[in-house]
Length: 145
Figure 1 (cartoon, helix red, strand yellow):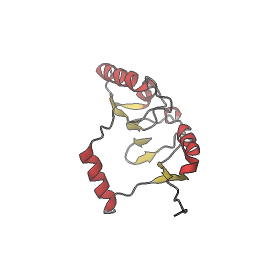
Figure 2 (spheres, helix red, strand yellow):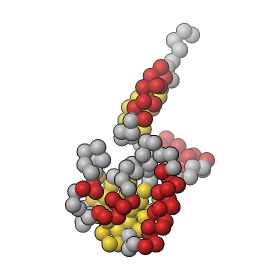
Figure 3 (cartoon, rainbow, N blue to C red):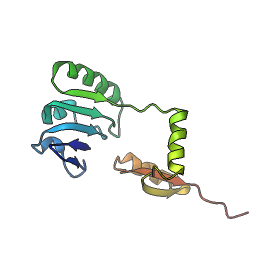
Figure 4 (tube, rainbow, N blue to C red):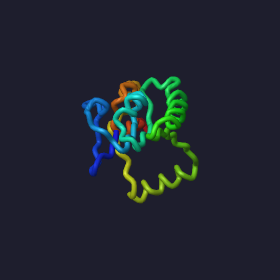
């Protein structure tokens, strides 16, 4: 969760702190987890604040559609803005990202690495919803050649 306050930026670890109960008000909330209601976010936004929902909880069934519709409707009746963000992947963007990584201009952040034989553990770890970066499964080499 990245929030912008007067005048400095803060990153809040949602596992350690509930930003909706801190008593602080924010100009911008970038919610990458989606574990708070729009109502809770509304109460901690400044009057002209913006809430961008870019993530969903680990069990998102119906979450995105509900939040997208609610955000659009809520924004019509309050002074704050609620925006949902969903990335649209395409070949050109992925090619550009590949080139940026190949030249070292962008470096992927890896949380954990698992061998292919540990794929079930990797999926379990992702399912817990606490990965802080990418989880990578590395194919095991066949040394029988």
